[in-house]
Image (cartoon, rainbow, N blue to C red; front, side, top):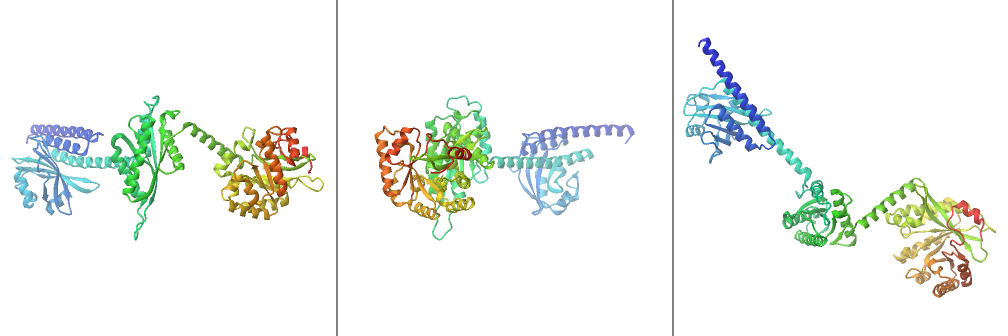
Length: 626
C-alpha cells in the first residue's frame, strides 16, 4: 500500500473511531438518565450497536455456565426495527470451547463463520441458528461484572463475510461493558427502590408505615387547613386475644390478626383512604376527601365491623378495637404529626371506656391533659429539688382556746416563688401515682417536726397526717408509718392518720385489716370529711376509728341553718355515746364556734384561728398544748 493510500486509510479509521466514540458518549447519557429502565437501555444499546457497526442483528444472551447454555434476553433486527420479535428468547447449547473463549477474550471476531474453527466446531443447535438467520460474520463481546461472566452481546452480519477492524472490535468490547453497566444500574436502582419501599412500608403487611402516612398527610393538610371541615385522621388500636385449640398451640395473634385485619381493611376501603400500619398493634387511615363528623364516625364504625369480622375469620375471640378520630380543624398549625397524634390520643381515651368504642379528639380536653402533664413534671422537679413544704393548720380546743393538734398539709413553692396549696396539684399527684412518694415524705417530715413541738402541762400537740386512697392501698404503708415514728422519735400516741371514705370503700374488709395493724402501732385513726360519703355509720361500727372530722359544708350554715345544726348535734351525740372525738373543719366565725360548743363539739380548726402555717410560725403563735 502506498504512503498516500495508507494516510487515507488512517483518516478513514480515525473517522470511524470518532463516530464510535460519539455513539458511545450519546448512549451513556441515555442509559444513565433517571427514567431509563433496563429494557429501554438494552433496546438503545442494540440499536446503537447495529447502526454504528452496520449489522443486521444484535442479540444479548445470558450465559448459564452450569447448564452450558445461552438464552437470548433481548433481540433486535435493524431492517425491520423490531425488538424481541416472536421467538427471540430461544436457548442454545454452548460448547466448552466457545464458553472458554468468552471467559478469556475482549471480543470474538469471526469474519466467516463457515471457515472459523471455533464456531464451526460448535454444536448443531448453534450452527442451525446461524444458518436460519443467514449469519456470515460475528463480533461477540462478553458481558462481565466484577470479573464474572454474565453473558454475551452478538453483532451479526448477514449474507456476506466481513472483516472486522480494530475500531469495530474496540467498539464491540465497549458495548459489552455498556450492557454490564446497564444491568448494574438497574440492579442498584432496584435495590434503592426496595430500600425506599422498606423505609416507608411495614414489612409484615406491606402497608405504608407512619413515616409514609405523615408525608401523605402533610401534603394533604397544606391546601386544606383553612377549610371549616378539614381532614380527618382515624386511629385503630387493636386488642385481640388468641383462642387456644385443644391439642395445639395458640394461634399467633400478633401476625394472624394483624395480617387478617390489614387485608380486610385494604380490600374494603380500597382507594378511598391511605391505610397505614403505625404501631405494632395499630393502624391509621387518612380519607382522601374531607369528612364531616358524622361521616367520619360512620367510617370508624365500619372499620370496627371489618376488624371484628377479620378477627373472627382468623380464629380470635373477644377481639376488640379502640378508635380515635381527629380533625385538622383542631390544629393550631397544619401539622401531620399533631393530627395523627391527636387521633391516637382519642383512641386511648376510647380504650379506657371499653372495647369497640370510638372517640373524637376534644381539643379542650387535650389542652387540659397537657396542663396536667406539665403540672406533673413540674411537681416531680419540685420534689427532686426539695421545693416542697409541709405547713400545719392548728386545731383548737373550743373550751380553753389552746392548741390541741395540727394537720400536716403539703405545699409547693413553684419556680416563681409562689406557694401553691394542695388543691392545685393533688389530683395530678393522685393520678400519676406520685402521691405515694409525696405522702411518705410528708409523713416522715411531719413526724420529725412534731417531735420538736413544745408541751403544755406535760402534753404535746397531736399530729394529724392525711393518707390518700392510693397510699392506703400500698403494701408498705404500715412499714412506712413505723419507720417515720422510729426515725423521728415521735410517740405513736401523738400521731393520728386521717382517711377519707374513698380509701375505705374499695375493699372494707382489707381496709379493716390494715387499720387494725396501724392501730397496733399505738396511733389513732380519724375519718375525714365525715358525712359526705355513703357508708359512714357502718364504718363507725365495723372499723377501728378514733375520731370524726365534720366536713366544713355542715359548719358553714351554723347557727342559722337548721339542717346543718341538726346534723352537727346528731354527730356530736353519736360521738359522745361511742367514745369518739369530733373535730369541726372550716370554722370561720365566732358564731359558728359558739354553736359547736353548744352542740358539745370540743375541737375545731379553720380560718377563725389560723390558716396553715410554717412550723416556726405555728409554734410562735400558739406555743403550747391544751
